[in-house]
Each structure stands twice: as structure tokens, then as C-alpha cells.
Length: 279
View 1: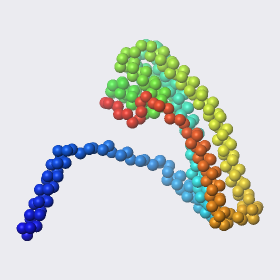
View 2 (view 1 turned 90 degrees about the vertical axis):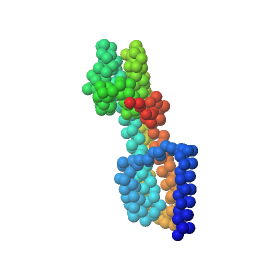
View 3 (view 1 turned 180 degrees about the vertical axis):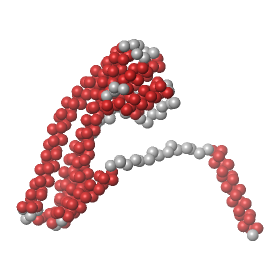
View 4 (view 1 turned 135 degrees about the vertical axis):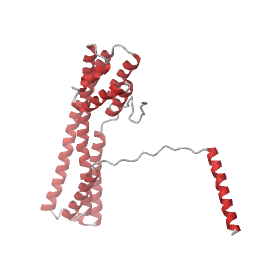
């Protein structure tokens, strides 16, 4: 019993010494890892891919066909979503340019910066109206510089950063000729929007050609399955299934390259979304 009690006392003493040493040396606090958030539409996309895989396998009897159909079903919505995202980006650029012109006109009529924001919040372009209205509310409750920086982070656009930077300088350093600066920013935004429209016109032809190619390929495959089964008979073997997977992989890789090329390029920003804004 005494031996057990002595062992417990020794263990407690060693633990106390270890705690003292750790407390004296200190512990390095590592930043918390960011949680990876999954897209909200991941569940229904997964259901579509699974349904396409099962349908392709059931209709042809080939698991390789199911894999190819499922992969195409996964990539095609991305291709459609890229075009919508680029359109939203262009609409937001146009909206920011229009809002910069509204601010310029309000400031030119001898309105203060807070007053110009409040007035334009009611008639701001629709793509950024909610953000501008929140900016107007924040500008009444806190520092104008902090409110503007939060607006720039919320809109998450390089052009918005330029507008915010000009307004922050004017608010904190009493800069002159803000109306002229907003005019130059609006003109640059109009030129950027026109350039994006020209690029999007060229991309639209590529997207249309890719969609026609996908429809033609699948239509040809279905036609051969229905009216020329002997032509497709070599794919019944294991080697034929591997060849089909290889061909389908190249086809899906081509579609994925269209998605990668169609994504809007990330422009360096003045106010990164991860920056903390001091209250």
C-alpha cells in the first residue's frame, strides 16, 4: 500500500514539474484551420451524376458508358454556370460604373460624402443596391472609412476597391477633386465592361460549338446502339470497356478544359476579403 502511495506521489510530483516547465517555456498558439465549406448544390449534383451513371449503365449494359455519362453530367452544369457567372460579373461592373457616376453627380452638386451615399442608396443599380443600402446604414452608425472598407469586402470586386479607396482618401484626408477621380474610375469601368462583352461574344461561339459537339456525339452513339449494334459489339469485352473509358476520359477532359478556360481571371485587389477591418 505504501509502495502504491509513493508511486502516486512521485507521479503527481513529476506532473507538477512538467506543468511548471511547460508554463515557463510557453506554448505556441497555432492559428485555427479554416473549415472547408461544401457547395450548397453539391447534394443535388451528386444525385444527378449518380442517376446519369445508373441510366447509362442500365440502357447500354456497359459500366464504362455509365461512368462517361456521369462524368459529362458533372461537367456540363459547370460549363453553363461559368457563362452565368461571367454575365453577373459584367452586370456588377456596369452597376459599379453607374454608381460611381451617381456619386460624382451628387458630390458635384455640393453634397457631402455621407449624403451622396445616402441619396444614391435609394436608386443604386440592382446588382449592388443591397450592398449600397447597407453601406448607407453603416455610414450613419460608425466611421465612414470603416464602413467603406466593409463595403469593399462585401462587394468583392477590384473596381469597387478603386471606388472605396478614392472615397476613403477623400473622407480621411480631405482630398480634393473626388468628382474627377470618380469620373475616371467610371470611364475605366465602362471600358472594362466593353472589353468583357467583346470577349464574351467570342466565348459564346466556343460554348455553342461545344454544346453542339456534345449533343452530336451522344446522338451518334445512341443511333449506333439502336441501328448498328454489331458496330458497337467490340465494346462488350473488357478491353473494349477500357478503350471506351479512355475515349470518354479524353472527351470529359476537353469539356473540363472549357470550364477552366472560361472561369473569370482573378484580378489583384486592394482590399482582400480576408483582411480584418478595425472597428
